[in-house]
Image 1 (cartoon, one colour):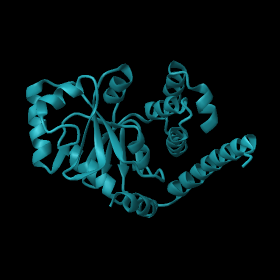
Image 2 (image 1 turned 180 degrees about the vertical axis):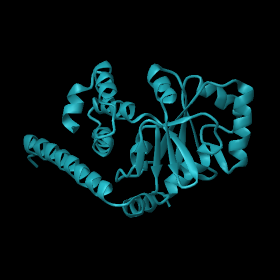
Image 3 (image 1 turned 45 degrees about the vertical axis):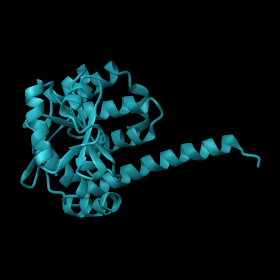
Length: 51
Length: 196
């Protein structure tokens, strides 16, 4: 298999940028919804991993 | 959530997760402590879980440590590292010890004795978080953000994401003078430029 490392590194960088964009989006959601609303969604993620 | 900067107090009306319950139960046994690192971001909504929660505690004598050790164990927690309190006490002089609920190693509390200037700063400037009828003490947000930026220097993207979450969420309320002073002192300008 011939791997194009440059392309993969570019994808990793773009993935990180996308994650940062999602954080901006999610924080805006938190700011514009009450604590119960956003935490209920977050708890589904946390509790599914820690139950 | 409401952040009263002057009172160093945040009122958080979030639903309690299993992780929050673990932290609230454990911290309820402590007199002096400050929560730091990833859990602080998670408490305020970061979309991830964690297996460990970092806690800083002032240095204590062995008698005080024994009393706390007994209270912790009587409350359904246990030390993961050792069953012997003297050994645990010795470990804390140079390393961290972990506590979890008995028979459930995840999540666990990473118990660190305050050892450096960053720890002292976090402890001395801690913020009170009121969650329903419980109280937690957390590291000041400016230090929390910069500490995460510092960890991000080792290309740890999760830490940069934690820093961004807190920065975006609290940027209107942060002490910018203090934030930039810490960024300069801990040499994190490059990382801050990535997340701001």
